[in-house]
Length: 366
Image (cartoon, rainbow, N blue to C red):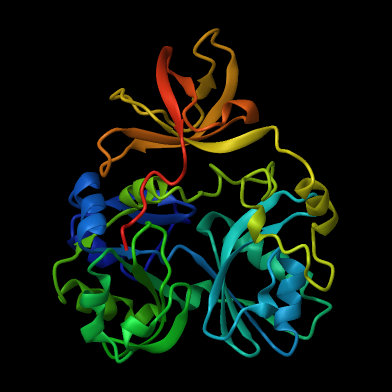
């Protein structure tokens, strides 16, 4: 572990649980506890408990906080209702994606922006710069939060006895100030697994009490970053640095729906994004499946099975515990992106057949 690697407030808990750790975005994070497949399956069939304290939290407050975010981000933050959340992005002037975000509107003049751990400092700095002409305060509050996620079909029954909030009334992408295990929390019905579940923003000093209360409330498995990756892959959810980057606009990533070109005022990257909206991307993001036991991995070439010509690249890939065979996401030439197309992946010199399928690979039944 590097001397500058940070530990979450739950680090000692993870050690007691026997976690294997990994350095991720400057944090020492649990990679797995009991095993990747067991943890993945727990989230799909029961409930899993995650420490996500490495994520970044930036607060904006003031009379023009909404307008500042409208200018800084591609979404229409001022149109978000109080208590609701929205998935959005922050882009550069040229339209390249700097990060994908969730914005929670926690009050009439208050917003919480959650950024990926690897981009948290960049996003905070950009928001400070972009908000300087607006009547709003921007504060990187990442050290003031611990973030715990409870994900899976049993998340509601597990969490319900621990909070006065009626979870049946909490909508998807909504958040409520409440208590969990007697500790103040912002409870949000959001997640990154493809399952129902909640994310709990709590004070670092309260993290262990909340984690322990959830862990003791019923059958739930602690889960690490490894199964979080296979869960989001099955659900077709993009990961920054894999499916998203500064080299891609939201339109090139197939996520043009998050760009609100009809917002009343200008925003950073608007001209470039308006141009991108009228263009057909050269490559499209697709799902790939294979009957091979060897999984396509990030960076592997996608090739034409007839002549071996390179026609794309794998962005994420792994064996799917839910489906029983490897799956992958890839950017491929647009004319080869039709579901049902037979392509191939060069897996360390072995040309492996794959088929193009619609994303996501997995969708929960209810």
